[in-house]
Amino acid sequence: MKTNTDLFEKTPVPKAVATMAVPTMISMLVVVIYNMADTFFIGQTKDPLQVAAVSLATPVFMIFMALGHLFGIGGSSAISRALGERHKDRACHISSFCCYGSLGLGVIVAILSVLGMETILHLIGASVNTIGFARQYLAIIAIGAPFIMFSTAFANILRGEGASRESMVGNLIGTVVNIILDPIMILVLGWGVTGAALATIIGNIAACLYYIAYYLRGKSTLSIHFRDFKMGDGIASGVAGIGIPASLNNILMSFANIILNQALVGYGDTPVAAMGVAMKSNMLVVLLQIGLCVGIQPLIGYNYGARNKKRLMSVFKFTGLVSVIMGTILTLIMIVARKTMIQMFINDAEVVQYGIQMVVALQLSAPLLGILFLCINTIQGMGKALPSLILTICRQGLIFIPLIFVLNAMFGLDGVIYAQPAADYLSIVVAILICTHLFRTMDHREEKAEG
Image (cartoon, one colour):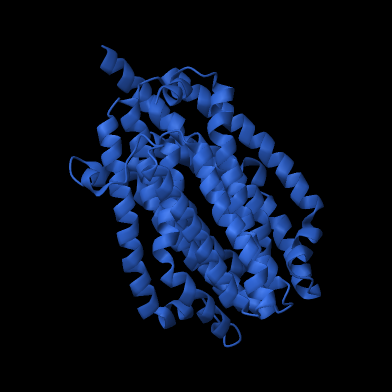
């Protein structure tokens, strides 16, 4: 643990941020490719209905990942703070709890999803034209829920101890397997959306096997042995305190996407397919910024646990500057390449026309969107459950979902399309206000502790 301790405490901030964030950003780039692969190869069938079905089903897949984040982000935050406080045994108890917690919840969710499939299909807004394809896709994804949750959780858990590179490798393995299998199962074997779902689950299984092997080989300072499993002493509540807001954020994003799709369905299946493709394209911008900010969360958590406010603030400010620069560059690239990005997935004239407008709309908030993710991950890294929960509810619950209804009523389809950037800017303001308050509170707490 000597190398990671030096990284958290002594390495110059730009190098420390790069060491932690670059592998995480690569992991997120891998996630982008991972998510684009299904839509890309389904698009090669030249069937907009299959593309629309995968777009409708994606929020359910994202909910499964969100439940994995409950243990992953919650566990990573708790582990990094425990290591900062020199409590290695507690960190091992936390990692073991997250291992069996994610698997157990995955089994429960798989059973409930299979039993409630028809209700889920109704809720996500599947039409008469798309419900058959959506059912085929979700049936496979539901069965694979335990693997999705475990791989998502442990990609984050490894970062909690500073093992960003190993986390990246696991993601990369899963993505490579998925990309290899996609064209075989979707196009060669002609399995369509069923093949896409199978490729996704097999990729997640491959990532799970890598993470398990990493621990069993003794490469980690953490543990997945059942003998280290412990829920008491604030372990379960500590993980849940940060994990639930983090998970809720992703769950609300998925529900917001479901409501967004339901609003778009009122204008036909084509806008649903176009928005699905536009959001896949926009993932490049969003997930790279998330990767940067998720990557530095262990640095925030460790230095908060060690009461090193000067270094914590240096990490925050440097990451904020990088996020704005990166967001601006990525936005310009997306604006220039908007038509090519849409056509890459499906070259349907009507889908492309809608998709171009949607890509531009989603990019309006992209230059500053990283500030929102930086604030969220800083709050989570500091272990501030209530502020994290407030910010989460504001972004996807109190702001975005009402805006969809209001702007749809006022401006029709255009209003629905521009709801996301409007919600993003309002959320950024709220995030900055909450972070500023926490930093001020931290000043008083440190002065009192030192006195």
